[in-house]
Image (cartoon, rainbow, N blue to C red; front, side, top):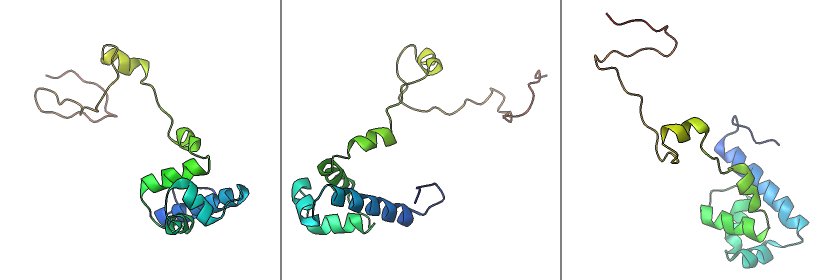
Length: 119
């Protein structure tokens, strides 16, 4: 099954669990062996594979033991700021998002409206 935004959280967890089961079996590990390698309990491995919620650190340990931790780097790549962001920040990486400023008179221009002189 492909993981898409339309899936519920439970469905995504179940699919991830099923994928980890296949990866564990492909590595030739039992749940107990994986748990020992990952430094987690066998019950934690069972919960992850069943698609139940678990502590993120336990998932990371399990992925590391399955040599699949590098997949997280592909999933959430490190984005570098674009040239305009660097220009606005005088060469520094932006650290927060700022709200758009309101005009001095308090009027709010809609994003699609054409620009007009204020009179």
